[in-house]
Length: 121
Length: 112
Image 1 (tube, each protein chain N blue to C red):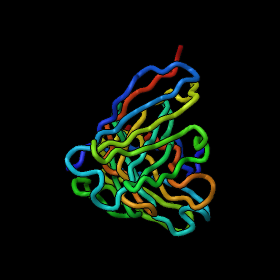
Image 2 (cartoon, chains in turn yellow, purple; image 1 turned 135 degrees about the horizontal axis):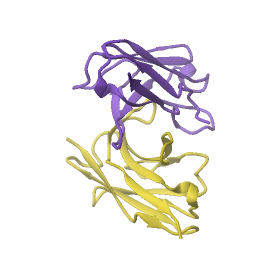
Image 3 (cartoon, rainbow over the protein chains, first blue to last red; image 1 turned 90 degrees about the vertical axis):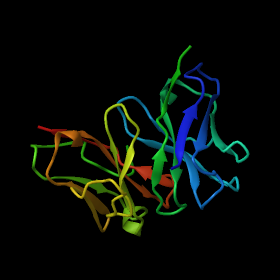
C-alpha cells in the first residue's frame, strides 16, 4: 500500500524558508486522480490545511498562507515538496503530507508520520 | 477559529455511547459537500476513520458511525473502549474564500 514520509530540517531560523519533501512509496505519485497535500499542526492545537498539488502541477493553497507557500511535484523522484517563506515562531508545528483522493469532497488517506519543524534563532 | 465547529471535549464511560458534532455553513457541509472524520491517537498522525459522511475504511470497527444533516455532521462511537481515547477531527470541502479543505478544531474524547 502507499506510504508517505516527510523529510527536511527540523530547525529553521526566523525569516528564512522552510523546505520539506514528502516521498511516496508503494505506488506512483502519477497514478490515479489524486491530489497531494500538506497539513500542519502546532503543538496542542488542531489541523490546518496548507495546500495541495495535482500531478499536472496545478496547485491550490490556503488563502491565509498563499502569499508564502509553494508546493511542487517531482514525478521522476515520486516526491512532492513544500516551501514556506518568511517563517516566524507561529509556523512551528508538526507538518504532515497526505494523499487527497479527490479535488472535491475528498478525504486524506494515507498520512505521513509527520515531522516537527521548529522556528527559532 | 476553525471553519467547522466541534466541541472541545466529550467524555463517556466504557461501554457507553458518545457523539461528536461538527457544525459548518452553507459554503461547506450545507452546500452538500461530504464530511470525513479522523482519529488521532496521542503522538501519532491522524488516521481516516469515516469518509463520505458515513463510510468506514477497512479495519475500522462498526462501533464508529457517521451521519450528516443540513449544515452539521456527527460521529457516534458505541461500546466505548479505553483505546478510543483520542482527538477526533472532521473535515470537509469549502467553496468560499476560507480555503478549499477545512477542518474542525478537534474534539478530545476522554474515556472515564
